[in-house]
Image (tube, rainbow, N blue to C red; front, side):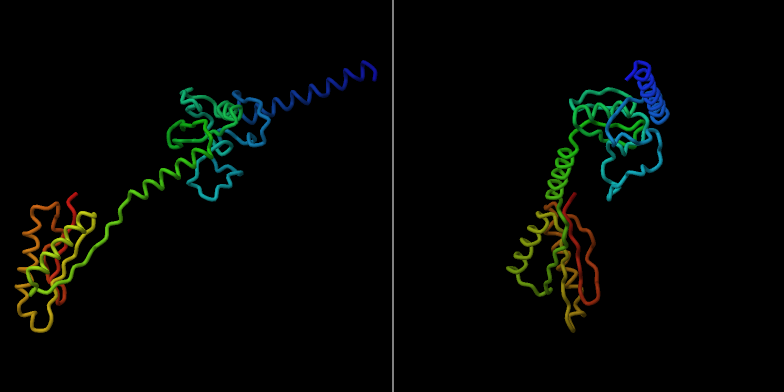
Length: 226
């Protein structure tokens, strides 16, 4: 190959390189950096939905090429705060560390992003969610049915059951049943319900609903004190 031909080929390649550089600057702005990852091919600063956003659950973390903000407030993998920097630069730092750039506070302006291992981050989040779920207690309503002619022993058994349910964080519905002509003595059913209230005064119990007549029964609702 002649020297003149070699120079011509080099000139062509240099011209193509300049065109690519201009295209990169037009795409990413003056703070653009050269990135050779396919995932970097997106429009930083475009607040519309990313065309490559294929998340099934839109509540999933916004990360890497899905970040549309032009700038982010960056925290690196060592916890160092880099302040506000271009998203393109933050993304390149994440790729250089073989990690991900994840928005941990997308609602702030500019959003807060952190460089981290997303797989490990997601695992720890799910683990904490499971532990929190285990600690949650579903409040149940335990029902105790009695007759107003209850004897002393049975009454004490019911008192112990109520104390147990309340200690477990559950509510208690006391039902004093009235059958047939017993409706004429509903006052005795109210007296029994109020007796429960009186005997529970020294316990962490609140009367959620005072004794009332519901159909053919007198009911009383107790709940743990908060």
